[in-house]
Image (cartoon, rainbow, N blue to C red; front, side):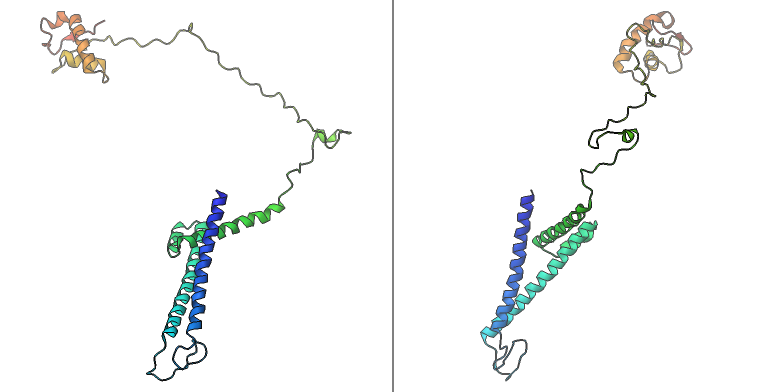
Length: 251
């Protein structure tokens, strides 16, 4: 991974150097071609000595002028891009991610990677400079207490730590009571009488007695036993019960 990062940083550095060199070469070549911007002028192309207005510059002069302008544009773009890339790297290191993205949008990817690599090398060099001031790992504090008062003990001999005081005694873990201990019994079933209310049926009474968790299958299986336990009160028709009748749950 470290070798890959170094190779990427080296490649980005070569690309950035090549772009800057291209701009410098264009500026130098254009300056050489456009020595005389106007026919009859002399000296540098930046110091023009114009002559007759009806005379036109040669093709070489125009090409030199264009090359110089393009080279200057490339160098200016390189400088601006590198500035934005460095600003983006510094903002990212400071935790301003939004501003870092905005500044990085004005620089190409290789410029941003190169700036991040330069910033990373700078950040690594700072802790390395302070690492020399750390204490020697072999240093140990001097012995103190009763062990240091013992006479005739060599300095290099290991000193046993003092034994802990027996002031705390761990409590014994709770023992399993086993199956012989009487377990709590379930509460007895509800055996109170049920008074039939207007609109009741054996189905609703059984459902109310079984509770909200009862299913239709549970109710269907339970209501015949209710009818058998209360047939003397209900009569021959289990679908006909009257308000005020007292029913008892089956045993």
